[in-house]
Length: 212
Ligand code: 3PG
Image 1 (cartoon, rainbow, N blue to C red):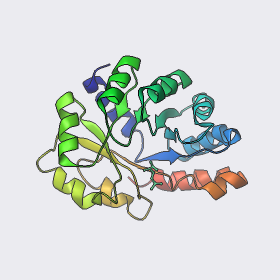
Image 2 (tube, rainbow, N blue to C red; image 1 turned 120 degrees about the horizontal axis):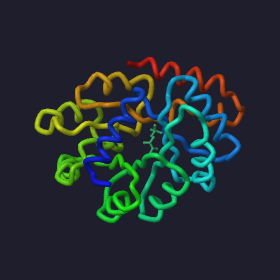
Image 3 (cartoon, rainbow, N blue to C red; image 1 turned 90 degrees about the vertical axis):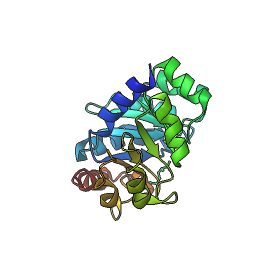
């Protein structure tokens, strides 16, 4: 799958809702009710980070939830890409981009939202055909003002910024022309998951879905 095709699909996924939940699952039993709660609240695109032991099984479980579009985050290696695809991930997200990772996404046909944080990184990905990128870590790397500035010389790249974004500052990003959506973990707080308070998570998702 070419980078251009990957970006076309990534763009469609990023346009499903203003927020992509970034999920860190410690308990596989949470996967299905969590996905159902987020989809019910209006957030269909879900990023499950490959940072916990149950992440791949969580993707498998969430991929069955009607209305969801489940992807794998924290892709670092070709092995991660292969495993994510096998688990049923429909897209991938990475904090940065390496040649080996990009080659693996082409080989395994996993649309990637590759991470970038500087003008040169953004340009290097654009040269390959990636017109949709993750900006990470968003707040720490310059936030919305930085992305607004990047949009002047490089308007052909659109972003999903992630890192330090919450209900408080999401609108600063979503108001920019070069932002398709934002990513964030605030819609799935650990304490609500631990308590099985799925209604609270649906309420957070609905609030996030109404941001735009
Ligand atoms: C991450 O990869 O952890 C994401 O950037 C989420 O960041 P957040 O927890 O600050 O939303």
